[in-house]
Image (cartoon, rainbow, N blue to C red; front, side):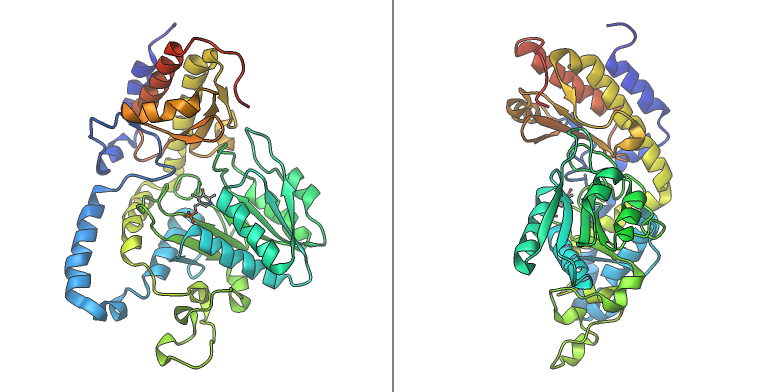
Length: 418
Ligand SMILES: *Cc1c(COP(=O)(O)O)cnc(C)c1O
């Protein structure tokens, strides 16, 4: 190899990184047994402050205020955090975001609301490479409502393009459901262009931001998006099973017709009334009691992202994935590893996928040596680079560990699995 080693180049990048000092704010970042954590796009690390805020919530809020807590701020928390999320990461004005349920359940509610708003239309457009839950939810709705799914096929290293969507939508389209950043390839969809194409056809859009929120900036209001939803346990570090969030554009709120009518989405829950009257505003998307403890950790992360600013987060994310792609080209391509993500940094989110037939058996071994990426069928390793908690050195450690395993498993092989 010519030039400095990967590890030395990574160390230089870490030294030059203006955000590097944030990494030590995360619990476990000094755990020597985890040499490289590249799964922050699946489960972000906890912030150290989360330990205190959860403990103090249990002690003083739950333990001290007891049932009075609901009237002293807990009931408004899903909307307060929703507004913060909208301001810090989504480009959404207040009153349009709420924290609730899981992503799967919110996708169901929003997709059902969308088809209810287009009663004369019979088709939902979705791409075949979307996350399973997204595909399954609209399959279920199609079955339930007698609708047809119109599938978009995408490139293995890409995602749905404006041209793909233009070819799929028409006068029968009720809804287009796509991901902002593809969970597998990392491809960033052109949200404003695709949204405009869907609107020109008279359809509504539902964007899944699970793999972008907190790592790739969004401008949901400016992009004229109708509905959006996403996870909080990935780049928002909300913790395992933390509730999801939803966005409904203000213009749709007065008529939003969602399918799970619960008391906390009704106009005046505590009258215990006889008939359902929807609440004004985004609260009408809520069904039941908000999962308060589960939404505390993401607030710490939103505070941090708000301080750092999304443009700086995005800059670091692009540098991390660019370094990862260079490292893969240099150290893994000779073994037949194929990049299954866009080559241009501005076209991908904060993770890349690399393919090789040997990867299925390799990931458990990597985990054992403290190198933690994740595996995606059939032969993909995903390297998820969480901008505030991942170092360039962690990328180098992982790529070197993969190279070492490929070298001992029989040298160069022809072709990837793509
Ligand atoms: C992670 C993810 C989900 C997860 O949904 P849950 O209901 O939280 O299990 C859904 N969609 C996409 C695109 C994801 O990346």
